Length: 82
Image (tube, rainbow, N blue to C red; front, side, top):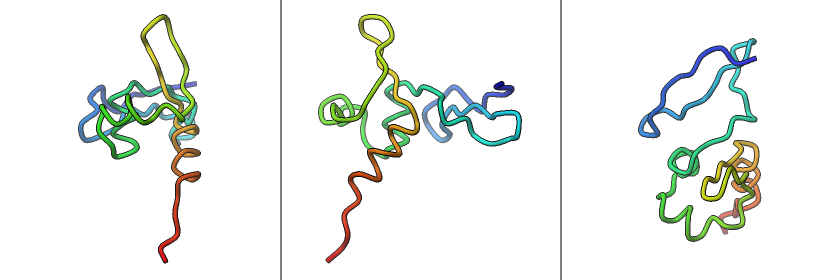
């Protein structure tokens, strides 16, 4: 399964788990600061305007975002320059 964790901080590196083949596991759940950093937006933007991004609710207040859902949100919102 998962064998090593890169970091706990959402600052410079995202906390990705590596799978047995050395690749990044794409089903890892990101906390709000990490999801915001992944998208390149502020935490307040994610909380206010990121409501269209699917998330997993854990308990009453805790939300987590899957990397594949964040990637799908990015792909859906790509605009071509004119």
